[in-house]
Image 1 (cartoon, rainbow, N blue to C red):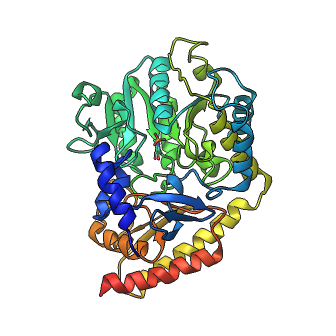
Image 2 (image 1 turned 60 degrees about the vertical axis):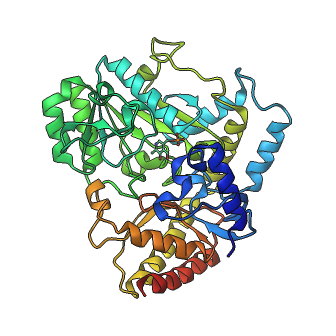
Length: 430
Ligand code: PLP
């Protein structure tokens, strides 16, 4: 495989953009190679500027549950394009998408559209603080909620501590209002609430973590979050930017039967266009301007192209009740094959999966939080990533990211991927 044109473009991109990219993970730094530049996508595949094709398991980091260029989405977008791309004014399609989400997710009584997942979580946090008149936010180590200041905080010297900034430019004053807890540690969260409960505005959580690789919630963990937040008058925010309409049509909250106070969305509800949304209980959501005193706005919010793509995606997903079962079967077939490819070549791997969110951790033990996730052998992952890439399989370029599947992936795609994984495993274990 030649990457000549990608390499040329990367050199040029580096002269124009930080690291040559518009989002850090795209630089492929953690897998120690240059990025490929994508020319087009079709179904389960992408093609790069050198003419190499790949089966795509990144799918734009999750939004493309129907694969690339699904004809229904393309047609809906074409129709909208011819009527205008943005008005910054009210449109009917905003109502249609809001209704569609509300129908699927009963905890969402009122919803506000924004332009990214970051914007959704940032606004949800402001809302929670405005509603409760409290300052402290609890987040979990290894969960990512976008890059707003309050949420770009890493664990302090131990759990049950206030966090420290995870990026230059985030002040320690801001970090002081974020407590970092351990994912799946129910006892710790109870302890945190005993100590600080009266001052906690909200707990924000990925109900299935997808940003330290895939880490499902342990039995009872989400229930504990619901219980403690309720008893202390704090809000529970489910960040379903990744899980929303990915793990089931009722999202993670439907899967685990927990009603959060606020839910954030992104990715799939924009069908591959820039989008975000946050919604929840009516009395809370009515705090948002112009109904209430919590300010939040956006020039392109509710953009008709994004609304149309999201609405059509949800239409497709809701029309066929077997869609999620089919996806689940394909994901199971893939994970079994990937696991076997490693086992038969003496490589320790732990595969976590919920529906079509999955991750291969190159480690021996179970992965249930940030600490256990970071026991993974990232060097081995990098070798595996490169070995797969040259065999035409595009995996997320980092150990700590989630793989996705789409309805466009066929059993042949999956079998080809497994075959490539056997070859890659032989190569990296040699
Ligand atoms: N929340 C979660 C769970 C995410 O996975 C992401 C992005 O991957 C975000 C928030 C931020 O979304 P965006 O990248 O659209 O700002």
